[in-house]
Amino acid sequence: MTSILFLTITFMGILTASAAPSQSYADEDPTPVATVTTCGGYVNTSSALIEYQPGASIRADQQCVWIVKVPLTFLRFRLVSSGLGENDGLFINDFLSYAPTTQKKFRIVGENYTVSSDQAVITLSVGHAPTRGFSLEFFSSGMVTARGPYSGFASLNMNSGNFSYPSNGGQYRDGENAVFVVNPIVPAQRTLRFTRMGLEYANNCVYDAVSVYNWFNNEYIQLGRYCGTTLPPTFTLEAGVALVVFRSDTSNVGVGFAFEWL
Ligand SMILES: *[C@@H]1O[C@H](CO)[C@@H](O)[C@H](O)[C@H]1NC(C)=O
Ligand SMILES: *[C@@H]1O[C@H](CO)[C@@H](O)[C@H](O)[C@H]1NC(C)=O
Ligand SMILES: *[C@@H]1O[C@H](CO)[C@@H](O)[C@H](O)[C@H]1NC(C)=O
Figure 1 (tube, rainbow, N blue to C red):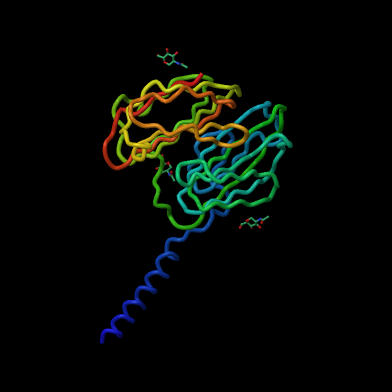
Figure 2 (figure 1 turned 45 degrees about the vertical axis):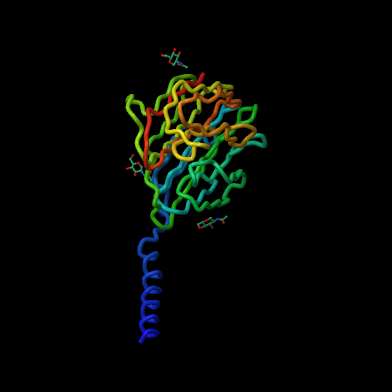
Protein backbone atom coordinates (compact mmCIF):
# COMPACT_ATOMS: atom_id res chain seq x y z
CA MET A 1 0.00 0.00 0.00
CA THR A 2 2.59 2.49 1.10
CA SER A 3 4.84 1.97 -1.92
CA ILE A 4 1.97 2.17 -4.42
CA LEU A 5 0.83 5.47 -2.94
CA PHE A 6 4.38 6.83 -3.08
CA LEU A 7 4.74 5.95 -6.77
CA THR A 8 1.46 7.62 -7.62
CA ILE A 9 2.42 10.86 -5.95
CA THR A 10 5.83 10.90 -7.64
CA PHE A 11 4.29 10.28 -11.05
CA MET A 12 1.80 13.12 -10.59
CA GLY A 13 4.60 15.36 -9.39
CA ILE A 14 6.57 14.78 -12.58
CA LEU A 15 3.53 15.42 -14.74
CA THR A 16 2.86 18.74 -13.04
CA ALA A 17 6.50 19.85 -13.21
CA SER A 18 6.84 19.13 -16.94
CA ALA A 19 3.48 20.60 -17.93
CA ALA A 20 3.74 23.98 -16.17
CA PRO A 21 6.76 25.58 -17.95
CA SER A 22 5.62 24.83 -21.51
CA GLN A 23 2.28 26.58 -20.86
CA SER A 24 3.85 29.95 -20.09
CA TYR A 25 7.05 29.88 -22.15
CA ALA A 26 6.95 32.74 -24.62
CA ASP A 27 8.95 33.03 -27.81
CA GLU A 28 10.70 36.14 -29.13
CA ASP A 29 8.72 38.71 -31.10
CA PRO A 30 9.33 38.12 -34.84
CA THR A 31 10.51 41.72 -35.29
CA PRO A 32 11.25 44.50 -32.75
CA VAL A 33 8.05 46.12 -31.48
CA ALA A 34 9.64 49.51 -30.71
CA THR A 35 12.32 51.79 -32.13
CA VAL A 36 14.44 54.02 -29.88
CA THR A 37 16.56 56.83 -31.33
CA THR A 38 17.42 58.89 -28.23
CA CYS A 39 20.80 59.01 -26.47
CA GLY A 40 19.79 56.81 -23.53
CA GLY A 41 16.52 56.23 -21.70
CA TYR A 42 14.26 53.55 -20.30
CA VAL A 43 13.27 50.86 -22.78
CA ASN A 44 10.44 48.81 -21.31
CA THR A 45 9.16 46.57 -24.12
CA SER A 46 9.49 42.89 -25.06
CA SER A 47 11.79 43.81 -27.96
CA ALA A 48 13.24 46.94 -29.54
CA LEU A 49 15.59 48.34 -32.13
CA ILE A 50 17.94 50.94 -30.66
CA GLU A 51 19.16 53.09 -33.52
CA TYR A 52 21.47 55.82 -32.37
CA GLN A 53 22.80 57.98 -35.20
CA PRO A 54 23.48 55.06 -37.59
CA GLY A 55 25.62 56.44 -40.39
CA ALA A 56 25.61 59.91 -38.82
CA SER A 57 28.12 61.68 -36.63
CA ILE A 58 28.28 61.46 -32.82
CA ARG A 59 30.34 64.00 -30.89
CA ALA A 60 33.59 63.05 -29.14
CA ASP A 61 33.27 61.81 -25.55
CA GLN A 62 29.51 61.27 -25.83
CA GLN A 63 28.05 58.72 -23.43
CA CYS A 64 24.52 57.32 -23.59
CA VAL A 65 22.92 54.92 -21.13
CA TRP A 66 19.82 52.84 -21.88
CA ILE A 67 18.15 50.75 -19.19
CA VAL A 68 16.32 47.75 -20.63
CA LYS A 69 13.54 46.01 -18.69
CA VAL A 70 11.71 43.14 -20.38
CA PRO A 71 8.83 40.93 -19.15
CA LEU A 72 10.58 37.58 -19.78
CA THR A 73 13.59 35.78 -18.34
CA PHE A 74 15.99 35.79 -21.33
CA LEU A 75 17.30 38.79 -23.20
CA ARG A 76 19.08 38.43 -26.55
CA PHE A 77 20.99 41.34 -28.08
CA ARG A 78 22.23 41.52 -31.65
CA LEU A 79 24.37 44.22 -33.18
CA VAL A 80 22.71 45.12 -36.50
CA SER A 81 25.16 47.77 -37.75
CA SER A 82 28.01 49.77 -36.32
CA GLY A 83 30.08 52.79 -37.32
CA LEU A 84 31.91 52.83 -33.99
CA GLY A 85 35.71 53.06 -34.02
CA GLU A 86 38.59 51.46 -32.15
CA ASN A 87 38.36 53.83 -29.21
CA ASP A 88 34.59 53.68 -28.85
CA GLY A 89 32.66 51.04 -27.01
CA LEU A 90 29.17 49.66 -26.80
CA PHE A 91 28.78 47.75 -23.56
CA ILE A 92 26.04 45.58 -22.11
CA ASN A 93 25.89 44.93 -18.39
CA ASP A 94 23.70 42.35 -16.80
CA PHE A 95 21.48 44.14 -14.27
CA LEU A 96 19.89 41.05 -12.76
CA SER A 97 20.24 42.10 -9.11
CA TYR A 98 19.74 45.81 -9.78
CA ALA A 99 23.53 46.15 -9.96
CA PRO A 100 25.61 46.41 -13.16
CA THR A 101 27.58 43.16 -13.14
CA THR A 102 28.90 40.96 -15.99
CA GLN A 103 29.90 43.22 -18.86
CA LYS A 104 30.18 42.46 -22.55
CA LYS A 105 31.73 44.74 -25.18
CA PHE A 106 29.86 44.42 -28.46
CA ARG A 107 31.97 44.76 -31.60
CA ILE A 108 30.99 42.23 -34.27
CA VAL A 109 28.00 43.05 -36.47
CA GLY A 110 25.61 40.09 -36.50
CA GLU A 111 26.85 38.82 -33.17
CA ASN A 112 24.29 37.59 -30.61
CA TYR A 113 24.69 38.01 -26.89
CA THR A 114 22.11 36.48 -24.55
CA VAL A 115 21.78 37.09 -20.83
CA SER A 116 19.60 35.20 -18.34
CA SER A 117 18.10 38.39 -17.07
CA ASP A 118 15.03 40.56 -17.52
CA GLN A 119 17.07 43.76 -17.25
CA ALA A 120 20.31 45.15 -18.61
CA VAL A 121 22.24 48.38 -18.98
CA ILE A 122 23.53 49.44 -22.41
CA THR A 123 26.28 52.04 -22.36
CA LEU A 124 27.70 53.82 -25.38
CA SER A 125 31.09 55.35 -24.68
CA VAL A 126 32.63 57.42 -27.47
CA GLY A 127 36.38 58.10 -27.43
CA HIS A 128 38.08 61.48 -27.92
CA ALA A 129 37.15 61.71 -31.60
CA PRO A 130 33.75 61.97 -33.26
CA THR A 131 32.36 58.71 -34.53
CA ARG A 132 29.34 57.21 -36.25
CA GLY A 133 26.43 55.43 -34.65
CA PHE A 134 25.03 51.94 -34.48
CA SER A 135 21.88 49.92 -34.38
CA LEU A 136 21.25 47.17 -31.90
CA GLU A 137 18.19 45.02 -31.42
CA PHE A 138 17.03 42.99 -28.47
CA PHE A 139 14.38 40.33 -27.92
CA SER A 140 13.06 38.68 -24.78
CA SER A 141 11.82 35.13 -24.41
CA GLY A 142 11.19 32.57 -21.70
CA MET A 143 9.00 32.62 -18.63
CA VAL A 144 7.23 35.68 -17.30
CA THR A 145 9.60 37.22 -14.77
CA ALA A 146 8.60 37.53 -11.12
CA ARG A 147 9.95 41.09 -11.03
CA GLY A 148 7.55 43.93 -11.70
CA PRO A 149 8.33 47.28 -13.25
CA TYR A 150 10.68 49.71 -11.46
CA SER A 151 8.99 51.75 -8.75
CA GLY A 152 10.83 54.80 -10.07
CA PHE A 153 12.96 55.72 -13.05
CA ALA A 154 14.54 58.93 -14.35
CA SER A 155 17.07 59.71 -17.03
CA LEU A 156 18.69 62.97 -15.89
CA ASN A 157 19.95 64.56 -19.11
CA MET A 158 20.23 68.20 -18.03
CA ASN A 159 23.77 69.45 -17.55
CA SER A 160 23.04 70.21 -13.91
CA GLY A 161 20.07 69.90 -11.63
CA ASN A 162 18.44 68.70 -8.45
CA PHE A 163 16.69 65.37 -8.07
CA SER A 164 14.51 64.27 -5.16
CA TYR A 165 12.99 60.86 -4.41
CA PRO A 166 10.16 60.68 -3.66
CA SER A 167 9.45 63.90 -5.52
CA ASN A 168 6.24 64.72 -3.64
CA GLY A 169 7.85 65.36 -0.24
CA GLY A 170 6.30 62.25 1.30
CA GLN A 171 7.87 58.95 2.22
CA TYR A 172 9.05 56.19 -0.04
CA ARG A 173 7.21 52.84 0.05
CA ASP A 174 8.11 49.32 1.09
CA GLY A 175 9.46 46.96 -1.56
CA GLU A 176 10.81 49.59 -3.96
CA ASN A 177 13.38 49.11 -6.71
CA ALA A 178 14.14 52.34 -8.51
CA VAL A 179 16.84 53.36 -10.97
CA PHE A 180 18.05 56.87 -11.79
CA VAL A 181 20.60 57.58 -14.51
CA VAL A 182 22.74 60.72 -14.39
CA ASN A 183 23.68 61.20 -18.05
CA PRO A 184 24.02 64.91 -18.99
CA ILE A 185 23.78 65.38 -22.73
CA VAL A 186 26.95 67.50 -22.87
CA PRO A 187 29.89 65.22 -22.01
CA ALA A 188 32.06 66.57 -19.16
CA GLN A 189 33.26 65.69 -15.70
CA ARG A 190 30.52 66.31 -13.10
CA THR A 191 30.08 66.43 -9.36
CA LEU A 192 27.34 64.46 -7.60
CA ARG A 193 26.36 65.64 -4.14
CA PHE A 194 23.61 64.28 -1.89
CA THR A 195 21.57 66.96 -0.13
CA ARG A 196 19.07 64.79 1.78
CA MET A 197 19.23 61.30 3.27
CA GLY A 198 16.37 59.74 5.21
CA LEU A 199 16.55 55.96 4.81
CA GLU A 200 16.06 53.18 7.32
CA TYR A 201 19.47 52.53 8.88
CA ALA A 202 21.11 49.11 9.25
CA ASN A 203 24.71 47.91 9.43
CA ASN A 204 26.03 47.58 5.87
CA CYS A 205 22.70 49.03 4.69
CA VAL A 206 21.25 45.55 4.25
CA TYR A 207 17.60 46.74 4.32
CA ASP A 208 16.97 50.05 2.56
CA ALA A 209 19.84 51.51 0.57
CA VAL A 210 20.89 53.86 -2.17
CA SER A 211 23.87 52.69 -4.24
CA VAL A 212 25.96 54.84 -6.57
CA TYR A 213 27.85 53.48 -9.59
CA ASN A 214 30.27 55.65 -11.53
CA TRP A 215 31.14 55.01 -15.19
CA PHE A 216 34.96 55.17 -15.19
CA ASN A 217 37.52 53.62 -17.59
CA ASN A 218 34.71 51.85 -19.45
CA GLU A 219 33.19 50.10 -16.47
CA TYR A 220 30.78 50.74 -13.61
CA ILE A 221 32.53 51.14 -10.27
CA GLN A 222 30.40 51.05 -7.14
CA LEU A 223 31.21 54.18 -5.14
CA GLY A 224 29.22 53.06 -2.14
CA ARG A 225 25.96 51.94 -0.62
CA TYR A 226 24.29 54.33 1.79
CA CYS A 227 21.43 54.41 4.30
CA GLY A 228 20.41 56.26 7.45
CA THR A 229 20.58 60.05 7.61
CA THR A 230 24.30 60.75 7.10
CA LEU A 231 25.02 62.41 3.76
CA PRO A 232 27.38 60.39 1.53
CA PRO A 233 30.63 62.07 0.44
CA THR A 234 30.68 64.27 -2.66
CA PHE A 235 31.51 62.26 -5.78
CA THR A 236 33.42 63.14 -8.91
CA LEU A 237 31.96 61.57 -12.04
CA GLU A 238 34.91 61.53 -14.48
CA ALA A 239 32.74 60.84 -17.52
CA GLY A 240 29.68 62.57 -16.08
CA VAL A 241 27.70 59.31 -15.91
CA ALA A 242 26.36 57.53 -12.84
CA LEU A 243 23.64 55.06 -11.87
CA VAL A 244 21.82 55.75 -8.61
CA VAL A 245 19.92 52.64 -7.52
CA PHE A 246 17.42 52.67 -4.66
CA ARG A 247 15.78 49.74 -2.96
CA SER A 248 13.66 49.30 0.18
CA ASP A 249 12.72 46.13 2.02
CA THR A 250 9.34 45.10 3.41
CA SER A 251 9.22 47.32 6.52
CA ASN A 252 10.20 50.80 7.80
CA VAL A 253 10.28 53.73 5.42
CA GLY A 254 11.75 57.23 5.40
CA VAL A 255 11.76 60.53 3.54
CA GLY A 256 14.14 59.24 0.87
CA PHE A 257 16.99 61.18 -0.64
CA ALA A 258 17.92 64.08 -2.87
CA PHE A 259 21.05 64.96 -4.81
CA GLU A 260 22.33 67.60 -7.15
CA TRP A 261 24.71 67.17 -10.06
CA LEU A 262 26.69 69.95 -11.72
C1 LIG B 1 21.48 34.96 -33.57
O1 LIG B 1 20.30 34.40 -33.03
C2 LIG B 1 19.24 34.27 -33.98
C3 LIG B 1 18.00 33.81 -33.24
O2 LIG B 1 18.28 32.73 -32.40
C4 LIG B 1 19.66 33.32 -35.07
O3 LIG B 1 18.62 33.24 -36.03
C5 LIG B 1 20.93 33.84 -35.73
O4 LIG B 1 21.38 32.90 -36.67
C6 LIG B 1 22.01 34.07 -34.68
N1 LIG B 1 23.18 34.67 -35.30
C7 LIG B 1 24.42 34.21 -35.12
C8 LIG B 1 25.50 34.94 -35.84
O5 LIG B 1 24.67 33.27 -34.37
C1 LIG C 1 6.41 49.00 -18.47
O1 LIG C 1 5.76 50.20 -18.13
C2 LIG C 1 4.36 50.08 -17.96
C3 LIG C 1 3.80 51.44 -17.73
O2 LIG C 1 4.65 52.25 -16.98
C4 LIG C 1 4.06 49.12 -16.83
O3 LIG C 1 2.69 48.97 -16.66
C5 LIG C 1 4.69 47.79 -17.13
O4 LIG C 1 4.50 46.90 -16.08
C6 LIG C 1 6.18 47.97 -17.39
N1 LIG C 1 6.76 46.72 -17.76
C7 LIG C 1 7.95 46.36 -17.35
C8 LIG C 1 8.40 45.03 -17.84
O5 LIG C 1 8.66 47.06 -16.65
C1 LIG D 1 19.63 72.76 -6.34
O1 LIG D 1 18.71 73.49 -5.53
C2 LIG D 1 19.32 74.45 -4.68
C3 LIG D 1 18.23 75.00 -3.78
O2 LIG D 1 17.13 75.44 -4.53
C4 LIG D 1 19.98 75.52 -5.51
O3 LIG D 1 20.62 76.48 -4.69
C5 LIG D 1 21.05 74.84 -6.38
O4 LIG D 1 21.62 75.79 -7.26
C6 LIG D 1 20.41 73.73 -7.22
N1 LIG D 1 21.49 73.01 -7.90
C7 LIG D 1 21.53 72.86 -9.21
C8 LIG D 1 22.70 72.10 -9.74
O5 LIG D 1 20.67 73.27 -9.97
